[in-house]
Length: 304
Image (cartoon, rainbow, N blue to C red; front, side):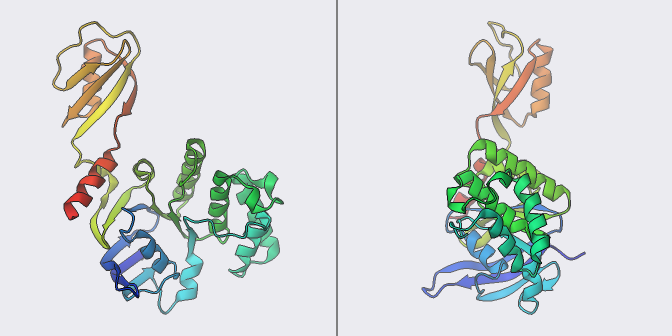
């Protein structure tokens, strides 16, 4: 089975001699949920533009589902759905027509497109607004419209460029749930995001770009094992004792029901078992930091 995406020695140099990509090699397996991370200017958007045929590469090869992008461009375009970061639809057009017209670009007849639009708009909770002009939608609704438009031709690969930018927490979570559904059904999803918690929550594999080069490629699980220290806030079922036990990890009382622990090479389950043995039963755990963000900052600083 061919990779969903295979990039070999990809370079991009703009007319002003700025090199956005420098010999990038990258592969994404079919059915993966893949994170592509990097600071502003790292080359993420340039890479997506090249994959989606919006930009011309300077050199290198791009293959999508075994199709050579250069010689089989039309077939490649049909396999990819892109949700760009910027809103780029006609703001005066009714939202249902935006989806139907997008489907037309892929040769989908109006009857089929209308049926698909209904399914997607209902799933995105936009059906009641289908006749409204797109400009009347809130920022979160516009994001959902962009996602529906990317899916109207039923692509095999979905590329999301900062899909949660400017979206409130509730909409972000519902979008995550929908993306997980799509991925569970076999769709390959490639995600760029500044919300590193989003990548940690959704993605199985990850590549980190810095200054036009891939500086890390790994499974999310393996990558996060490189961060040995975690600081957690634990909330107890009952009032905590006045004097906390001495254990093999740092522990500090915050209030009658909360403690902070610093785990260095100690697993969360081991810490919870140790506390339970002292009569402290924990009902809620939350992190004071994003582990992926800590690692990301470490890797990019090393690349400087």
